[in-house]
Length: 253
Image (tube, rainbow, N blue to C red; front, side, top):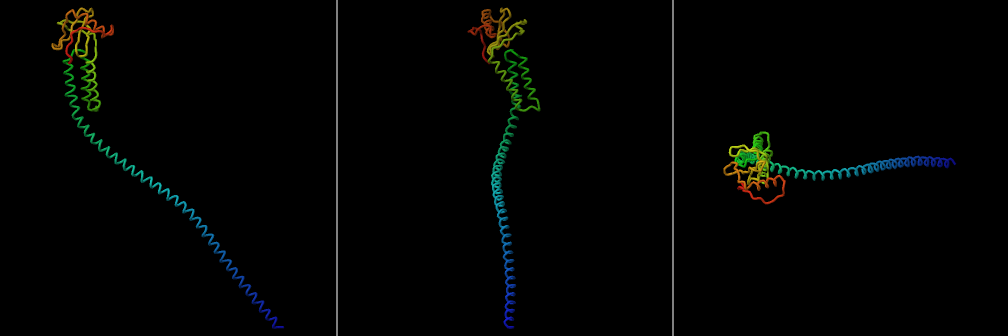
């Protein structure tokens, strides 16, 4: 009986010890599993965080690559632009040297050749608008003598005077002036056909004459030309319709 009780007690002790050991093992295992799960969750969180960062990095890298491609394109473009500008600057420098040579040759030519010859021509030309024409040459000379004036302005002034002189050769003009004919002063109206012929006629139409270019003097004309010169003057003043007239003419200069 006592033995049976002892064995039962031993069995109970063994069972209790096994239960304690099993419980300890289970709790240890549960702790390890829980720790493993926590580490797995932590690792998964880090993986997800890294995936998000990876996407951001990939997007940033693509943006940088796109920007870099654009910048490389712009750099090539600006290199070509700078190269073009350098060529243009070289061309401008060449043109600058050419313009300087032109200025060095053209300016003296305009003043010492063109204007001098123009003044000589006016002095020997028919006596019309002398003061105005002489003043035009003087103004051009003053422009040429201006140290601050540009070559373009000086050329423009000379060409303007030449253009005005050229127009005189194409127009029919009249003027009321005082002339000296055979030593006598006459109040007359002059009639000019370009640079071909120039006539005068008195207010009463009885005294007529013309400019003798060869003699460089005013000379009376025969009375037979009174009517024709009078008609020509009326045509020039638009007082009658244009018609054929018979008057002496000189040679175009």
